[in-house]
Amino acid sequence: GENVEQHPSTLSVQEGDSAVIKCTYSDSASNYFPWYKQELGKGPQLIIDIRSNVGEKKDQRIAVTLNKTAKHFSLHITETQPEDSAVYFCAAEGGADGLTFGKGTHLIIQP
Amino acid sequence: SQTIHQWPATLVQPVGSPLSLECTVEGTSNPNLYWYRQAAGRGLQLLFYSVGIGQISSEVPQNLSASRPQDRQFILSSKKLLLSDSGFYLCAWTAEPNTEAFFGQGTRLTVV
Image 1 (tube, chains in turn red, green):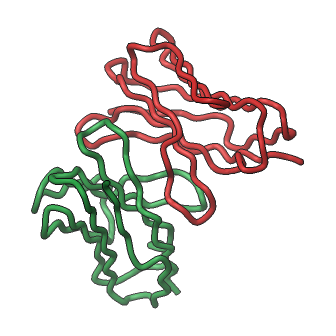
Image 2 (image 1 turned 45 degrees about the vertical axis):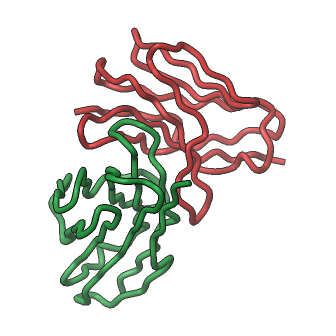
Image 3 (image 1 turned 90 degrees about the horizontal axis):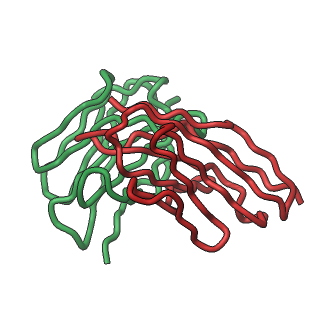
């Protein structure tokens, strides 16, 4: 089955700086890679996703890049703001049982 | 629009007591349904998934069970809770496998 590794587990950046979270996956057949944001005490919510026919996707301050050859994908957040503080999860196709998630990154935005 | 409801939001139960967490989805038919557990504020561990009524697949052996009595209802149960069952339980649905997953707000279970 699919295996997803996510790094770092904790990331602290100054407000206004950029944050990058990286994930690798094992199954070369995977074609769907979403990113979720989870605020304290709530369920995760999709913030951006990418499919394997695209190398990069942007939505305002958030972007995701995908390198299928190397089997890794990354989340980029620019001009970070206090409300970006949360836990972020990457995921990849996991076959019939749905998505396989990374272990999460706790992003801390320092004022 | 589609919505997912999960309750209760918090639950404190003694060891050895039964458990029933319910999840319902509105606005869609034949969703794929999932139960996840999240321990220590991180990591989503898939517990059960269902592609249809009465069809349950388990990812890990455990003290829990799941049932899908109706198309848009998914229930997580236990006959006797253990301390190790404490955690944050999340229900989710997808329209198809490997598409966007929509999560409920979660249930914080504390077994004492």
